[in-house]
Image 1 (cartoon, rainbow, N blue to C red):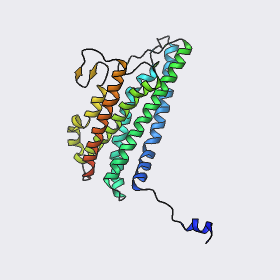
Image 2 (cartoon, rainbow, N blue to C red):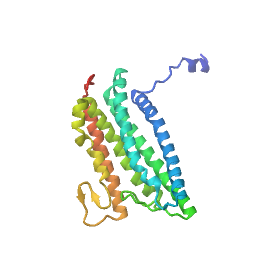
Image 3 (cartoon, one colour):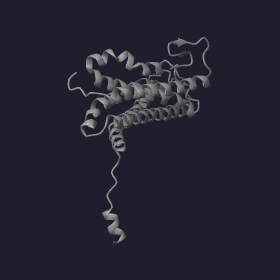
Image 4 (cartoon, helix red, strand yellow):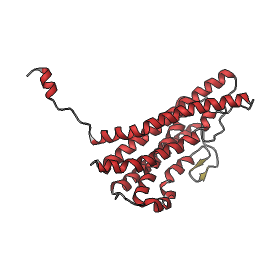
Amino acid sequence: MTTATATAARPTARPTPLRHALRTQLRLVGPFTRWFLAIAVVGAAVATVVLAALRVDVSTTVAGLARQGSIWVVFAQTVVLVSVHLRVHVAAGMTRRVFVRASVVTAVAVGLAYGLGYTALVLLEGVLHDALGWGTAVTDAFLPGPHDSALALLAEYAPVHVVAAVTGLLVGSAYQRLGGRWGTVALPLTFLPFAAALSLSATQVGPVALAEPLTRGAATAVHVLGALVLTAVAAAAHAAVTRSLPLRTTG
């Protein structure tokens, strides 16, 4: 048997269920994520030009404030991911365990994508503002200054987007398990990881207001470590809800 014949006769390796589910989910969220980040670039540029034309102070970063929209968008994306894809996944003969693993990886990946995208956008905006002599003050108390290092910015942008994405999975799976009415009643609990992540700052940790503001390094460490804990809690709750989930046909 020749080498060519042996190669042709060799069966084609099929992707594992986890790899197949992960690829499918990334294809669902990937295009929207790219489009949203592209629109954010255009929006920040247009807003800056308009402010400059109106002779309004343009020393405030526009891109940094856009984070307030992106964290809610990524949260909604993963809620929809569970609502749309879970039934299809199970109907195709794959397990809920595989769905949980793939969805958590997808949520973390899309959260990191938003974090990287906004870090690059704020840094680029800072360079442009400096070149034009405008400056780039940050008015969002939860964000470091854009003149800090790229790593410091990424440590602020990425964690909150990741927590938002994984919390979206938990909210989506709770709605699938409980239905519309009780899923809404459970929102104060299922939304809690995201709400807690939003409350992490230099002057506040969760509901506790600090007597003295944290230093920049300490605030970043609290933000990153707190987000890791909250992500793990949301992912574990999503797994617990989904693995024994009876798919409902009515709300």
